[in-house]
Amino acid sequence: ESIQTPLNFSLFVILQRHGEPPLIKGWIPYVGKALEFGRDAHKFLEEHKKKSGDIFTVEMAGKYMTFIMDPLMYPSIIKHGRQLDFREFTSRVAPITFDYPPVTDSKFPGLGEQIVRSFQLLQGDCLTPLTDSMMGNLMLLFRQDHLGAGPAKEGIWRSANMFDFCHSVIFEASFLTLYGRPPSAHRHSSMGVVRKDFIKFDTMFPLLIAEIPIWLLGRTKAIRQKLINYFLPHKMVCWSNTSWFIRRRSELFEQYDVLRDIDKAAHHFAILWAAVGNTAPAAFWAMYHLVSHPEALKLVRQEVHDVLRLGQVEFSSDRDVTLSREQLDKLLYLESSISESLRLSSASVNIRVAQEDFSLRLNAKRSVAIRKGDIVALYPQSMHLDPEIYEEPQTFRVDRFVQDGQQKTDFYKDGQKLRYYLMPFGSGSTMCPGRYFAINEIKQFLCLLLLYFDLELEEGQPRATVDLSRGGLGVLLPATDVRFRYRLRK
Ligand code: HEM
Image (cartoon, rainbow, N blue to C red; front, top):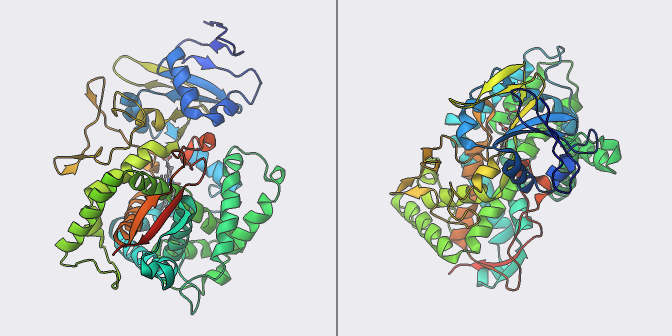
């Protein structure tokens, strides 16, 4: 069965075989619809949903991707772990992007499993020392860079670029917390250079993930090599206060003689990207929404003071702030503002690769035929911006995820309660292992900002908008940076 329908002005056709979803092909062979998707993924998918319904297949860069757009169908995909594998995709693309040999290679028996096991060291009981260490490192950076002597002390306004501010603090604090500090110093002297290189690499990241050969990308290869070299084992052994997570990974790599030092370093570099690439823009959006909604900012600031007071500690700018993991858990409105910011800015595509030909049951009435090697994709941003689930979806609401003094978890579509309604961290067994750490560090960062500073946007700027070019890859960056000012609170 094959239907050919010329649609509007574009030169694509819908081809459908029995039991398979409608297929949307681009008119340039191979590239398919990848370019259009890259430009504005949300719009692209919404348009196809209007034409083809909740399930359709798009040919993208030579691959067939079946998008499941109805969030009520998400649970049936997420539970199909056996037939729909996520790691097949990352285990192929990550080595190319970060330059290490595929962990699934028979030269490294058990390495993949051990790496996955190491992710537990970001969670559970291990989250406590990680969170405490983050607090100390954030406090160190705030003291040395932002609370020091000079104008800040006198309560005079200083101005800065907000994304750059967030990125520099989150980058360095995450670095110190995960990898530790150099011998006889609290900070790495070359952090500024490393961060600049990281940003250059990160700009090319969407192209690398799309498997554009690195030699076509100017100096990217040399920059990546410089970044990787920073993590060579003989350097890392000299660092102290390294997290258990990174120490465990270093020990693990030592067990494999066939891993070269630069391969071990490349693995460490990949973790730096995973840890900062999304967290820095997530911190930015949370800060931006709070600063541009002064009432929300006031509410959250009050909540932070209340939680500190409950712990019998009155805030004083002379003493270091400590916020335990339990205290951070109590910050409901702060958490809601972070969730709300992630809802508005995260755009990761959840990809699963079919391991066999099979019929994917989506609900009581529907199933679709999937072929081995095809990709099944969820695009949660479409759910995050669905007005039926989230009223006025483009508006930031500080209390969107709070109800009756608790976290709100009931959101509905077609009158049915959604099992998954907020998915910035992916889904199923491959969900981001750093998610608890990420939320805590963003909370800690915002707490310090709100406690120490008055914060304002500078006048005469348009509202910040998301740069759509990274649609599918995580938290979106702002299209342009935002000027803000801050001064020490009285
Ligand atoms: C707001 C911040 C963050 C966001 C939005 C985020 C999001 C994600 C997403 C969407 C995935 C892919 C999961 C999937 O598709 O199923 C992922 C994977 C991963 N994330 Fe995060 N992440 C964040 C912060 C962090 C942090 C702070 C760390 C570590 C310290 C981290 C470590 C990882 C690792 C190691 C993986 C790969 C997991 C695997 O291979 O199974 N992430 N993250």
